Image 1 (cartoon, one colour):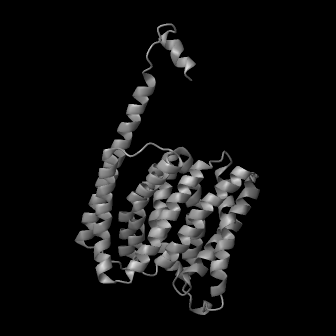
Image 2 (image 1 turned 30 degrees about the vertical axis):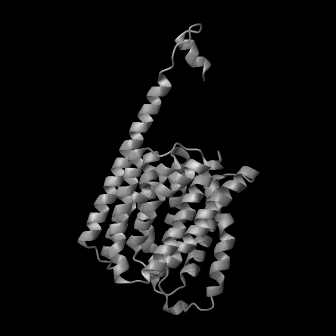
Image 3 (image 1 turned 45 degrees about the vertical axis):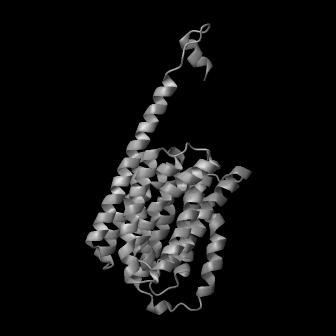
Length: 315
């Protein structure tokens, strides 16, 4: 189940940047974002009623919902505005920075183990790849710097949100957790989006815009969030954030095929660096986990208590 949820998360995140750009054609980006979240809240509420799932409202649950809302409201708002300045593929590329940010935040907030030397080498390779991918885009249009800055703010908020959700982890149903996060985020989206209703020219809005909003509501805000919260419960924040190292190549390919975004040789070089960093990071994580298991299984025998009894006593 974890593998399926991980795959769905990768696919959703890879298609989301392009859908975000399409959802802003003919509409202010924040208005399209508000519509997306409003639709998602209604659909998830119906799902809760149909499945007879209760919603948890204790103090821990509220902290969890607020933590998730930080990444959803803050992250998406900055992404939607920044998407107007940079290609959809570059959005996914910039989010490839989140493993490093998540790992560092998890170390200081959750007390996770510090990075090993090869972790830093892996992140250096990934950052080098991200730099190669970004360089050509920034040369084409200097206004892209604003878009990059906005998306980087979103990366930080998203990473912080993931770590805090892990800190205030719930045992409730993942659909209930998704609904709580959406509900706590909704007022922020309405405040940001409603002022732009008057300026919208609805008769000029293409059908693709509405389809993109619905897709983002269903796939991005419901299916994607359910998968994300599920793997966040099962895996460490840094491991979950590794999804963002897998999506840039897919997102750029989709942008080239459906949005006429150019992919050059430098882009391919950057992708190779990112994949190399991802492979090294995973390999180092596996080695660290195996070492921990070996250390946990070897318990020195006490001179008084037999080794086997000592193992049970330590549990």
